[in-house]
Image (cartoon, rainbow, N blue to C red; front, side, top):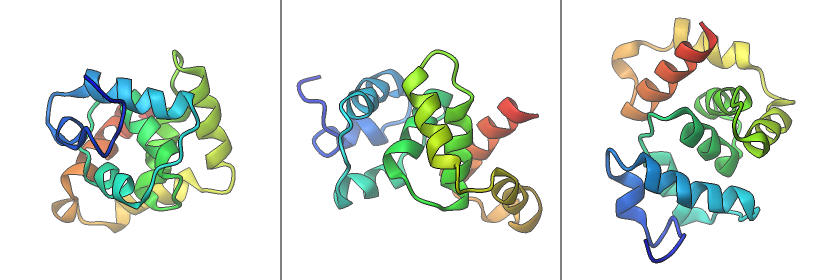
Length: 130
């Protein structure tokens, strides 16, 4: 991998089964406090990740207040091996309600309308929390 860039490594970020390569790029952004731009945000919003650490880092990079991102941050907050991820996730969760996000996906939103991203994030969230 030549460059640690979400934009320049878009194909790698969006390719299924590239969890390891993604984590290297995502961790680089997290470790260096790199702010994502609009194009990188769009790529991350499309990214289907099935590994808890990647999901949590995506949540930290996006820093938005959506229900899906709240679940991403909740996943990141439980990470035991990546202290920076866990601490940042907890900070970003301070003004968010995990319970509200959980209820939205568990009770309010019909599973048949979940996107692939929502299916995977919600699945990992449920494995960690239930």
